[in-house]
Amino acid sequence: MNRQFWFRLLGFYPWILGIASAADAQLQAFFRPSRIRIGQSAQYVVEASGNIPQFIYQPPPVDGLRFGSSQNLQSVHAINGHQSIQRTQTFQVQARRTGSFTIPAQTFSLQGKEYELPSATLQVFEGEEEAEEEDWTESHPRRSAAQLSTVLLSAEPFYVGQLIPIRIELNSSVSCSLLQPNPLLLEKTWINGPFSELRKISVPQNRGGEVVYAWDTTISAIKAGEMPLQYLLGLSIQEPMGMGWFGLFSDNREEELFSKKLFLKVQNLPASAPSSFGGAIGNFSLGRSQISDIQTLLEEPLTLRVEVEGEGNWERLSPPGLLCKAEDWKTYSPKGDFRPADALRYKGKKIFDYVLMPLKTGELALPTVEMSYFDPQKREYQTLRHEFQEKILVSRNRQISSQISAPKGNAPLNARPEKSDEPKAQENTPEALESSFFYLNDTAHFSSLIPFYRRRNFWLWQLLPLVLYLVWLERSYAKQRAKVLEQRDPRRHRRSLRQFLGQAQKAIEKGQADLAAKALQEALHAGLASWGIFDSRSMTYGEIQSVCEKKLANDEDRQSIRVLCQHLELQHFASSPLAPKSLQEDWELIQKIFRHRPQTPS
Image (cartoon, rainbow, N blue to C red; front, side, top):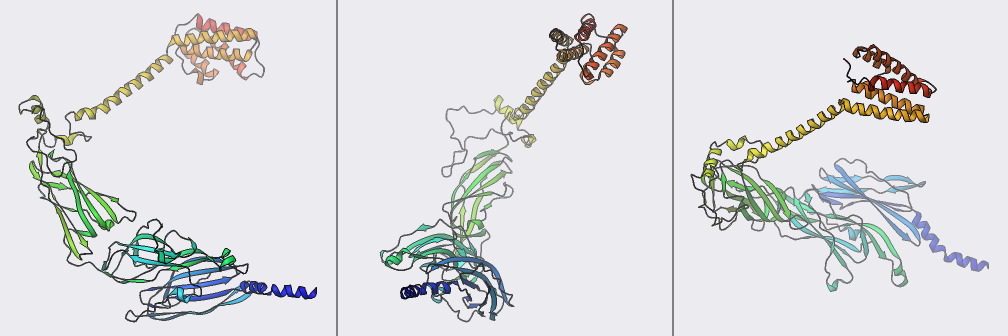
């Protein structure tokens, strides 16, 4: 029995030893790459692996080095059934001068144990020396089953401000998932454009089980020189641990993939740029150019639409210039509307709408459209021009000659075909005389408050809202006046008096003292309103007595009002209701005052 127990214990010894080794923490620190040129950037990587709590590290300040933003990644590994966590912190580093820079070793206490972070050295040298091309996948003890690469979709040379289409490919032979939607551009000397959606591309048969995914994007250099280009992508990789039954288990880990660093030569644009060059780099062409109308009035605006098609840096494309005589046309800055043809906004069309105003009458030639751009394939500036063949007829009035034929090439936006069966207006017709008188003054149509001066009845359009407002105001005033007159109508208040007296009589007969008192109060207010005292509801009974003392000429009426107000006030404030006999007396008193004396007091 004892011998079998010891044999079983020896069988579990490798598993227990694996747990003990996995529980120990390991700290690593290194520069990637360890040798760079001045002006390039490197990465300072700190790795903490093992069964340890969260480890946050901040590098100490080093003279000559500048530490930028950092990225934190975490991966979980299963070693012999025990969980092991690996945390990686990556810091962007830039050197301000040449030399050798060393981050000294440091000691940390984790879970009551002391661990040492080794030192790391970065060599920075001048640009003439050869750089050390380190392959991180070869120096790492575990080579990744996925690779990241950058493919240029256009040939050199490249120029500052040029939009360069590229493709970023992810080659993977194992199952993996993205920790971020798009790769991250590491170099600050490039501007990254929008990314296309991740898609799977075709893979040759000799590539085995490898799967290739790709992003399309664009980059643009901000300065000239030999610029490095590199991308970073975070992945979660599920790699099988072996063959057969061991293939059912996988090693799940998070990794950072770095594409191979490319060095692209970027040049400045040639200095011999034409005056019409506005910063466009690519391949462009002038599309349709059309005018809103071929006949107009003096100083009446027209719209000239110019379309530019092609591919390139649309953000830097300035509006094409208009070449015309200053005494013929007055031009205004256009508005540009870009319509992309792809997700990268690399191909598309941009529409410019110019506003033109003729400054003299007669037949005027339209301005010539001119623009220049730089073609990186031909390595020279290209100039595009468009000259309109049609003429614009400008007149002082609307009797424009119909002898001009419509243009054959570019049709105007609002041009209408001339009907042959329409009668031609004669110069001495009433319509012609009216039109000539109406537009006798060149600035007459500018006296309009709203932009309807193109029609003869523009004053009607301006007066119509005012007339509608006056009609609404008059009806509102009439309704208000009718309401006031209705409130001051004595017959209406006498009807209310009879109604409330009837309600009070019924309440007295049923013995409902409260309802009878309220009906008598309303009857008193209605009777006073029939005499012209309209605000008695807001008065106290003492104020009603004083007003009636002043306005009533009959002493008997004043005495009756005084007695009635005393009874109703007593009913309002008394703790017990009045007797039906007292209410009946008040009812008869109101009958005597208002029913037999309906005349208005003096």
